[in-house]
Length: 509
Image (cartoon, one colour):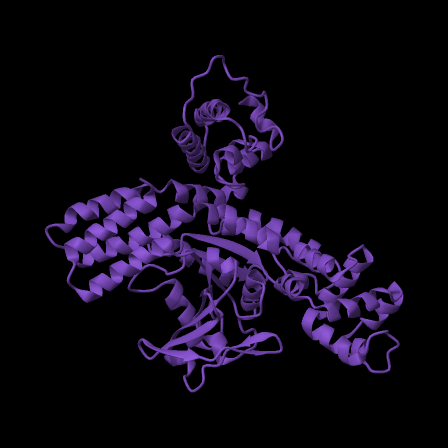
């Protein structure tokens, strides 16, 4: 029986034990539904950090408002729906359906006569492939000038009466401030108390502005990313750090043929001439310019892509992006969005069942503690036993601090692999071909177990590194436990370097 099946059985047994109270029944229904829903990913960060733009880029459509309206002052949930639908939850549970309106290709959200302080949440259902895997939550800025706006985000992330409703936090920041470190530490403490989100992915947002929007912005963002990943003050506070230009990613996914045509015309202008025209936005948009694109169209491109986006698009066209489809793909590739998606999938999406089971069991435990009866003790003990299996979270915690461990790079790279940092399948953890037979998987896993146990015998091993090695041993033992043993006519010829393509260190396995 899988963890999800065990959790579902416990929830149903609890319903039988505590049945009769409509409020408890509703809590248990929500608890069980949690097992069938996508992972919940909340985007949070300081005001103007680019949360809504990144959310739109992830979805591939402009459905989150990016302008400073009342809607950006409330917590907004975006989930999968067969058809677009917007519901406003306000005044203690009243649900009001809002009209689905689009203006200039963007979804228009309007609270009407309801003020932000009366809103519990805004719920947007939208037909999107990504929303089948993740429910996204857009939160107001954490450092807003308005105290009540910041408090709405904190109330969502650190509720007083229960666990955080999000499984994963994508935390956006444009550079490292003490306020970011303090906020991430608060999230870790909340998580340590059993009520916070299960993981945090850091995003260096608006990466196109890292060096003032000049041509090397994305390269500069990657240098900053390396510094942030190695920053000791961030040790253990996040699972990854990814530079992303949300605007570039969004424009890649919403690119129109008319925009491509205008950008291609600009790409045909001599490089020096175009560079001179783009020294300032006023010069770029002035009507008397000799550029082969109308002033109105140039202003629209500037509003849509920004100076950096235009420069990147022109560069991509000059480098061979011959049509709108090719340019769109190149913009998304350069934006860093694919790396963020991959990080979310590897770190959390592939642990989907474990994370949702843990979230549901945390809620079940609180229900059982609030409604103790003679028959609930057994259910509580069973719940605690399932919650005690936290190896998935141990892996995430070790991965979050891996970059600051003082280890040789090959050892660190192999640790990341074994702990699921490149994928959670047995073959991905061991660096084997996807179609490797069970006997090869078992033999390689046995060698890996011995390798990490031997490293644990080092006489001057520090506590944190020892925890990482123990986690690696447990991960390899889990591979063994889930790989069927097969009779062999002769010893399986294990390759001399099962991870040679990834890390030469593994030759010692």
